[in-house]
Amino acid sequence: MKILLSFLLLFPLSFFAQQQTGSEKFWKQLEAHCGNAYEGEITEGAVEGDSFTGKKLVMHVRSCDTNTIRIPFFVGEDKSRTWVLNINEDKIISLKHDHRHEDGTEDKLTQYGGTSTNVGLANVQVFPADEHTSDILPPASTNIWWITIDDTSFTYNLRRIGTDRLFTVRFDLTKTIETPDAPWGTED
Image (tube, rainbow, N blue to C red; front, side, top):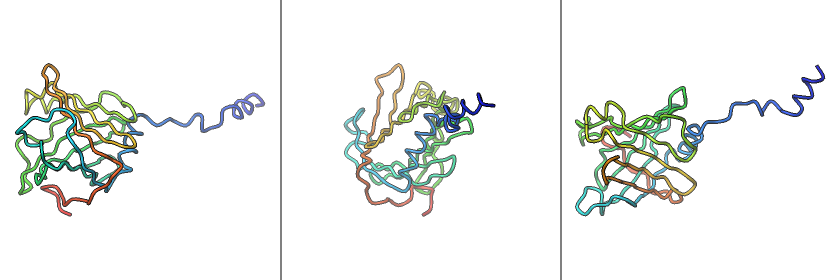
């Protein structure tokens, strides 16, 4: 009994408490921004004449449920895109792209994305393309998306392996902006 008491004094019960995974820490960081909107800029992959360049880019961490975080991504007046993050019971995060038409109906190319292969890090989560993505958009079969977050920025990134395709948009988390209206297909 003395040995057990000595052991417990050396190692308090908090020592044995399960540590948070990288994905849980990432999730908590993202949840801290729920309700806030931020302006961003393309830092990689801007192409003259594309649908992003020269437009105001806004992310809005619109809703945070226990297992789902929805982040509309507005490009100028286009409110068709929402990033949907889900965390499962194994603490693995998935990323889906919910694309809607102005009338709220789903776009033909929607719900593509991927799932992390592990719990990742507190500031980075990586999402290789899943089977659904390969089925509806074969060229995106080699897509890898990743999201980074720290005290000052959130980045959304896309790399298409085997090509020069790289896209990064960085949002400044130090300056909130006015909360935008709902994305297409969602009501306030």
